[in-house]
Length: 476
Image: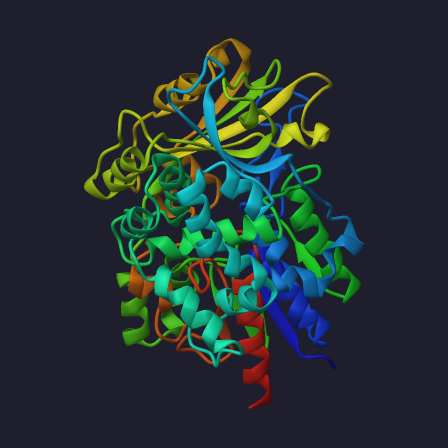
């Protein structure tokens, strides 16, 4: 008989791990506490009937780049990536009456042309090699932190810029505010103060991915990613049960392998008695990062951006200059929220008409806030959008705000509203959640959530690597 494997949690990482294990011939069962699979990759009518909103992310550069998703052939199971007219727009104050924005286009050359002669040349030099060698570099960047690199020189060249604070690299490489702002907006995805070492790494990866694979949305919503993974799992004979909240490992029955798509806190809740005291202590010391405050909107029409380029972009970074963004990203660590917070906005309906009734639109935006913050950032977020899209509020038919407590109530992995699975310090980026990475102190028990490398994002690579570790352990 096939060896039995159990996966706890049906987020993209849990489902990816399940697919890899089932493809290897194991009898795989997935247990999900909620009634709908997907974790953060879910889609629901959060505002009005007919308006389909992604509960978590909507733009998936790392999903499109994911070696795990590619190896599973998710397109065969209904997943379709849809590219917006432009991956990213970053509006700025000033300019003509129409407004101005710096654009990250699919082409490095087109992007560079919008940055001016000197900064355009600097952008080509910084980002061009990443795009040229993306196919070789992406697996290295999404691999475990400790591995023998297949392309050590490429990785070393990337590392020279990646280890720097984003503010330092931006101000060293670029002379003008347009290029610096574009870089800072990408760096803010790191959920770190931009003065922190390694904050530049995220900016470089997202810039490279934007040119190499785009920042697409999943047609129909993020739920399509989870549904495709579940269909893939079923094709290998695996099963998924929803509405089953696992409270202890004993409830799972005999299994050679158990893989948990849980944070360290979640693993302790179901398995602390079976872990060594020293390993459990490391899990308790694991640190969670800033939370997020999100607003979903049902809109009567497209967002009336002043800058025309913003109207065709899937993602819009609403935050102004590098200095503004840096101040905003420092604030959550100090326990505050800026009056003008950096606001990450996605408008999937500009390229995917399935998201809303004809002529209507959906959009969402979030800003970073202190972990567990109990405040309401709705007004601040909407004021930031209105700043660059006068008349925006008049387009709103309905809204739904989600604070840190609501995020955690809907998905226990989002501790204090932390969407990244843990604080992004240099140590926790490399050795998350402990130096054991995916393995635990109990034989046959593994972690695969975004609290393991390579961390947050919808790419399935945490689950892919955890499954590989589990398969290797079965051979020994």
